[in-house]
Length: 323
Image 1 (cartoon, rainbow, N blue to C red):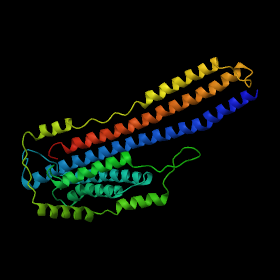
Image 2: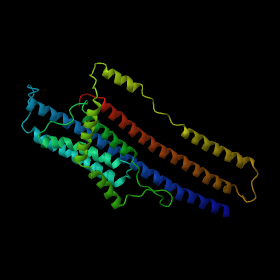
Image 3: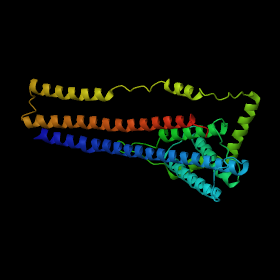
Image 4: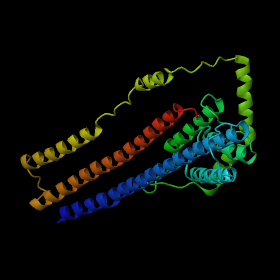
């Protein structure tokens, strides 16, 4: 009778306390992965809206002031509608930055990169408001490449920036304190348009000292970029830990059965139900740990997929057309 009570208490303690904690931790991690995917999707949409607005404003400006595209008919309220669209897209970006500031711990220059991307994004609205030619005109423009670089850095921050975490009993997450979240947001907002302009002036001065020679485009440029991309090393495959874990669990189960049936029963076990109770608790622990591992591994695979999609999409944008 004592063995039955001990086995039952052990099973409840393991499955009810540790098992539920691990499952709750995995569920929280899975939800945060889904949130990261949603933020990444929102960033891609905001990035696409910026490119769309830049192309439309460039076409309107060149037709209006340079006389290009004479066959194109443009409505009279294009400038106002473009300003509204640019402002709305910029507001969506602000929402993304606030969410990152309140949920992530920034390291190194992450906040600075977010601030610079914000300032680069504002250049479109400023050019429309001031009725000036858009800054990002083609892929040969260093400012165009610099903005794309910051877009890649922001996507990387979304995928890799750590969330605050600590032990809650066994496992769990903690949230940033309001003071820490406010400090993160200030680090982003402290980057102003002057910082963007100063960086451009420093780059221009450096380019003048170096006197670089810009190579002319050739028809083979696209084919060469395609060969370089195809020659990129394939991502390393991870070791088959899942297979090893399952094999180890099966061997443990088989080993326990062999031990139970071949080894003489100790005097403490007076009934077969006692042995079955202990085996059931052991198998339940093994099954819980194996299931938890696969759950956490699936979340990690989803995160790797998001990072790979970001790398491919941003690389494709950099190697695209003239805008």
